[in-house]
Length: 411
Length: 224
Image 1 (cartoon, chains in turn orange, yellow):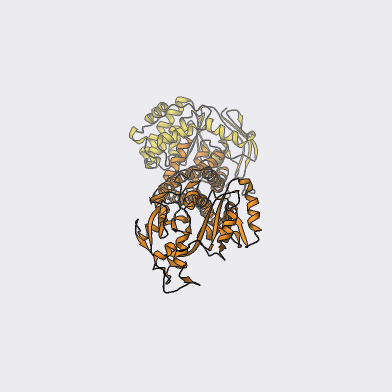
Image 2 (cartoon, rainbow over the protein chains, first blue to last red):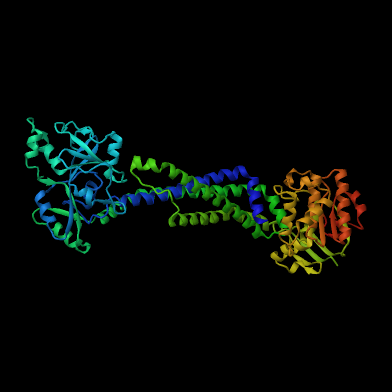
């Protein structure tokens, strides 16, 4: 009978109740949505690189090194010499090494020179290997492997020819147009900056720069035949990634590199640098959360205001309940449960809408932002948030409930 | 003895200087049907609130069915009211968004013996002349006459020993008023229920065995 009274009473004031329920639903949607995307973005972000023990570059800040080597953001301060690379990777603890050479671009997408070890050893997410959507890794000098988004946005197919530009600006006028590259492979989407990268061999990078001095093209260019015979071993690279035989030795190798006497070098643990970087992004993330909490709080107040303003028109009803023997606490609980029911229904609808929204936008987010979002947001965290939502609405609803209680005690 | 009042003094907490009730002694015997009349503002409704425990006297003793209301706390007042008293007002007797059946069932929520069968409710509604197609419609959609008859059912369902009716017929036309009175009086005498009936309309006094003016009970003189 109590539940029936709550239901029918709410239904009787369906206009105002519906509006406050919509406000509540929106706030639940925003709160759960922000929390979920926040979580997923963090995960996606931390999953950009995995299985790499050390990243080595020239001496700079650890976040800067991480940004240009993994996220293709910003610019390296200097290159490191090929001889240092060979020297360090000859260490017995080094299992594999991936050299990286940056500095060129193609229509705004960065070009990365590397070796085929990259496709063998690089891991992202939960130790996922790079996989090919089409084609194979590069084998020849003038072959290129495209990231998923590069191919998709620029509409490249296998065997298409493309020209790299010197520098990383999207409207570069210094093109390596004398030496075009052929697309041999397209990678599957990863949700990481790899999707935005063109991969060529180190020799390819070296080749297109052999007739360049100080960033300027010298005219009488070398023909392809001459290049094939020329020594294309690189003189310098931008950075390299290391996989070690034993993790215990990581710090020894790191110390060895950081105190390397022939050249100033910096070795970073990607996990540590990632979490440092995330701490900076965290401010934005917390601001988002704060805003959604405020939205929720105002929705809570909205529900309470609706119930409070209904108290005046319900004076007769309260009086009548008292006369038939209802104690004042009954009135208090009646209004509390009305607020609780509004919140519960809002949580259910809000979660439902969020599920549908995530389901629909999933493929859009992957293809446009490379963001992998799990549709299932009902994590332990979400359950905690729902509990807090319920608790908060009960607390705020004590205002109208207490007003009803007072009306019940003063006849 | 159904009601026994002695040396009752009452004033509202908001106005402590103005004594509203001063009743040296007043009794009503069990099964008595009392017609109470008097001018507005002479304390009739306040007296009814004291009898039902909605208000507490400042001084004096109130016994209703040998239970000392002046010694009960508010929780006990609520229980007593639910179990012993049926109340009918001039209007707002029903929760407007609940239907007749639910309104009656709601009254059963607060009594000791909650096992009231739906069959009893339906029989009662039937007896009071509410046709079946009105049982499920919200109280606000019923006519005033129907609402007052459902209110009798609501008051009777808990089998109270005392029925308090505060101007129950004032909103009714003559035909509905007669119907209401005959149904109420029939029920009350069948169950030997004590009835206190407050009204301005002295023409209704003919139904009652005892007729009293509030001014004969309450010795506070009207100052207005």
